[in-house]
Image 1 (cartoon, one colour):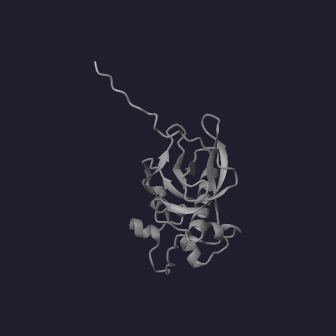
Image 2: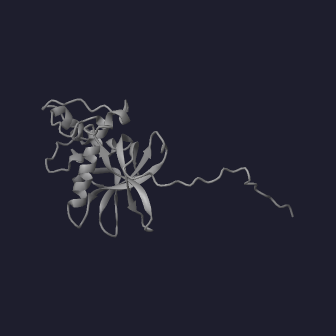
Length: 203
């Protein structure tokens, strides 16, 4: 009987990663891991949202990859809340985070309420967030096993003193300001008029 052997002596040693320190500012690319849940009445289309069958909560399951620097290519995972049966707080936190992401990615000052700035905070759907690059702040939280893990829960916007140096020329251009008679991004994506009651990411 001929024995076959696989020699692993030349394989690389496995890498052990320490947590990225709390408070570290990193430029990240966010991708959404599709969960296949849609609710057109909420503007949740394209299969990007995920629904927890046990709790009924709906969220975006996001992966953040560090683009450069000491922690380049490191990955973190966080959820962006869209709905919780417990109340509006989780969804409101999600909306706040998405707004900050858009401000960071498109170079919009949080206090800027000009028509161009307001337009930059609109998206046609979750597809506009998939692959977006922004400056994030690292935090820690417990995983399901009670172990610390690095997460991104906040975006750094142009009012931060380190924003310009860290983002450099990586900002994504904001969409051109639209005239009042022009259809907004939601209408262009869906063919329907905007609904003032919709969440900001659905308009």
